[in-house]
Image (tube, rainbow, N blue to C red; front, side):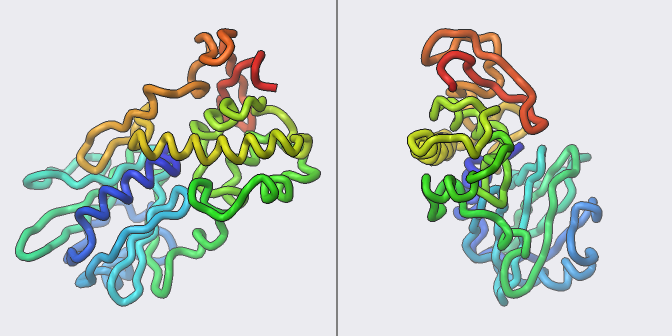
Length: 274
C-alpha cells in the first residue's frame, strides 16, 4: 500500500507538471471509487478549472483547483497516479482519466488501480472532511514523544496497531510501522500503554527518520508503487524489518521472525527488539 513517502513522492512529481494546467475533461470508468456525489457533479465542479500546487497530508493527495475546489485522492492498496508520455492508450485498470491542457499542449493524468480500493472525492471550500479527521502528519506534523505518551496512555492495544491508526498519526502503514519499530528496538506486539518514556522518545525519532528515509528513497516499490512515469522507488533495497523473516537481523544477526499483529504481517527481531 502506498504510504506517506510514496504519496509525498507523487506529490513532488506532480508539482512539476500540474500547476497552471487546465482540467478540460474527466473520464470516469469506476464510479464506485468516487465518494460523496455522482460523476456528473465531479465533471461540473472540476472541468474548466486550473490546477494549483499539489499538497499532501498523511496518505492523502490533495489537488487544489481554481475557485477553491479540491480533489482529494487516496491510493488505497494498489493505486497509481501516472502521466503517460505520448498518446494515451487505455489500460484495463484505469479508473479516472483527467485530460489537461497548457499553452496548447494536451496531456492526461491517470488514476490506475487494479484492486479498486482507492478513492476520489471532490469538494468545494477545502479538502475532504476525511482529511480533517486525521491525526498530525507523521513526517512533518507538530507532535513528539509527549503526544505519543498522551495518545498511548492506558491503551492495551499493540503499539503496531496504534501506529497504523491514522487518527493518531497520519501516513504510517505496515511497511514504515515495522521499520520504525525496528529502528526504535521495540517489539510490535508490545502494549502501547506500557512503553517507557525512553522508548517513546526513541519511537518518535524513529518514526520521523524512517519516513524521511522513505521520502529520500523516492518511495518503496515492493509491490505496486511506481512514480508518475512508471519508474520504481528504492526504499525496498534498504528495508530492515518488513518482509525480512528468516534473514539475519542487520543489527544483531539473529533470524528475523514474522507474526500477525493487528491483522497485518509484522517483521521483527526477537532478540534486539524488546
